[in-house]
Length: 191
Image 1 (cartoon, helix red, strand yellow):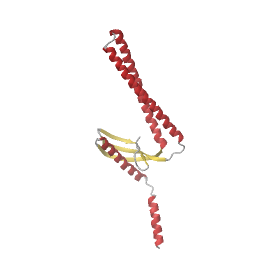
Image 2: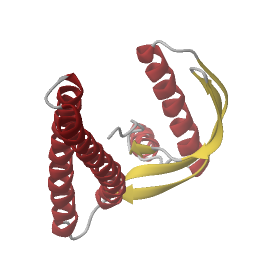
Image 3: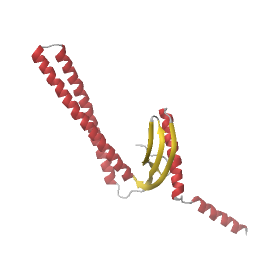
Image 4: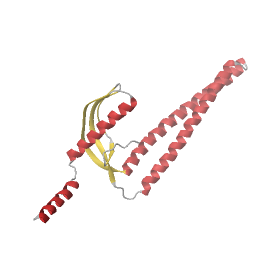
């Protein structure tokens, strides 16, 4: 009889350890983790955070390729932003250089032409920084694309949530359905 009781306890312990979370239980755990994450960010940033409503309404499981695809999208936006900054800075440098030449022809060497030439040089230095950033973005893009190409079958080891959030974060009110990425052990994925 004791063997049967021990066997029953053993079986119950096995089944209770392997309990698969329901969708609702998973959503609740995601909500708790997200709430803690937002509160931690507010604490670290030293700004007020009031969460009025936070409810994960759905989630899907995604893989590393999904995360890398998101990184590619962000990378592309960074590329476009820096490209635009580079183009406008080059135009400013050209305008300042033209002004310096005009001042030099009209008034001769002096403070106006020197100021314009200095401004042009500042814009050239700024453009060089933007160009360097573009080169880094292109390299990062290549690395991400290579990582995606090398993966044959990727395990779905993340949750992508669809969460309704009504909160005041700092000076901003947020009322929206937002997406967050969490690991399977309910830790937020931060890029």
